[in-house]
Image 1: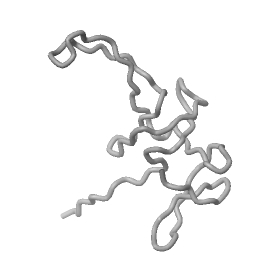
Image 2: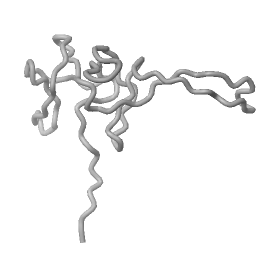
Image 3: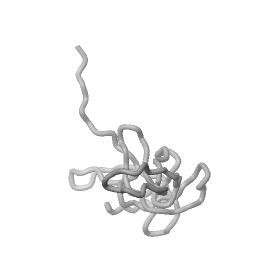
Length: 114
């Protein structure tokens, strides 16, 4: 019988991080991560992949209308921006005081959590 793992997937970005989009229509944009969907390996980035949704009239919203919202993009299409240098960098993890901390592979400095 196989053991089921309930560990959460570790990703290179977290909510509140500043990221640079490295692929897709918004390539080159820098923005803040609003939400991370770990189950689908996707992130919602502020102002990136904006889609138009048509809202049907309801009791709460009698007029209905058109609403623009951010849709998720794959996490592999974003890269963390190093707060110290302002450049996109890959991240690694190292043990600091018994806790795994993210660090910038470009500078070697720790990345502060949001």
